[in-house]
Image (cartoon, rainbow, N blue to C red; front, side):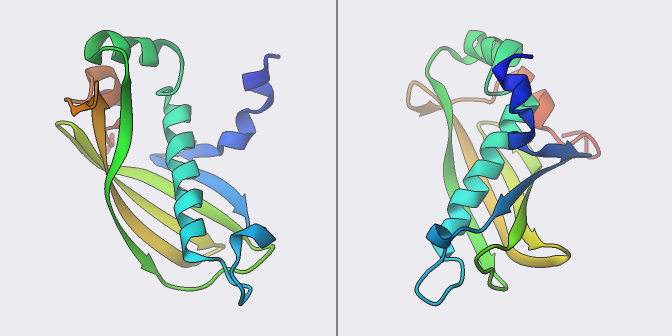
Length: 156
């Protein structure tokens, strides 16, 4: 088994159209009061978005090469805007799940919905707009990427 296969479980899993990534809270994630520092959620959610794209095949393989052919080398995604609601605190040793799903894909942007629950209790909710850039400029998301990111139930 290659290294990617050995560590595939580290990227979480996709259930339906939602990516689920378990995250344990460590001491370094907390503030002086012992609760998760608000900026730690940004790191947790970035990991969720990155692994969601990884499991969709965006980070490697044929889809990556196809996007390079369509958009050119040097393409990447950047967070354009983010709205976050902090609903409840998490504490050291809590096991959280970062949930990520695509809401809308259009033009050069996609909107993602993210939640961070602890069990059934939602702690954080976020809406994230991500832009697709090539050579530092916004460009239409290539068709191959658009197809895997567009929510199937809504058809795009």
